[in-house]
Amino acid sequence: MMLKGIIQRANTLNQNGRVYPQSILQREIQNYQKLIKENRALGECDHPESSVVELKNVSHVVREARMEGGDVYGVIEILDTPSGKIIQSLIESGITLGISSRGVGSTKRQGETQVVQDDFQLICFDMVSEPSTPGAYMLREGKNIDQKEIDRYFNKSDRIDRIFNDILRW
Picture 1 (cartoon, helix red, strand yellow):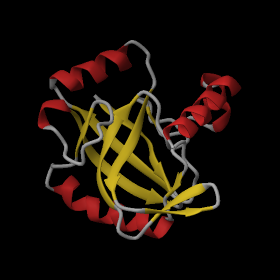
Picture 2 (cartoon, one colour; picture 1 turned 45 degrees about the horizontal axis):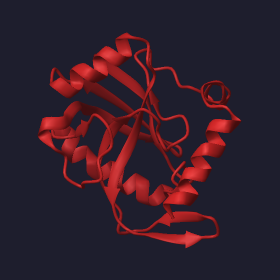
Picture 3 (spheres, one colour; picture 1 turned 30 degrees about the horizontal axis):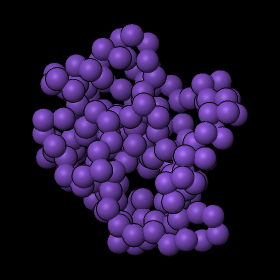
């Protein structure tokens, strides 16, 4: 099963209060091409805290990642692993899944946002129930979900809950 969609966005405030500058994201997507070519661009089902991709949790492999303007578009292949079977079953049941980048590096506060700094290193892209990047949903048809459709899934109360939870984590 192949899925397509936006996997990250530059210069866009995400649900975690972070902004990825386009130059940093572009550099990391370019570096990530080596993993894609070597068939090692693996991702997990869910988003662990670890900076290591656990092979026992791998659900997919990224087949393509490319920048178009400030958006990163990706194509992933769901693998025939236990975690991959969970992802496939959810998708076949009509569940819309998100994708989220995992990386290491520092951020610098600028107003209410945390700007990702030049030491950022992209590790992988994980499948998640709710992506931090706006519109980062993976679909079989490869169509993009626009903000109006996102608003259909997440009402004002959901967004307030997310903000409240972010405050509690600080």
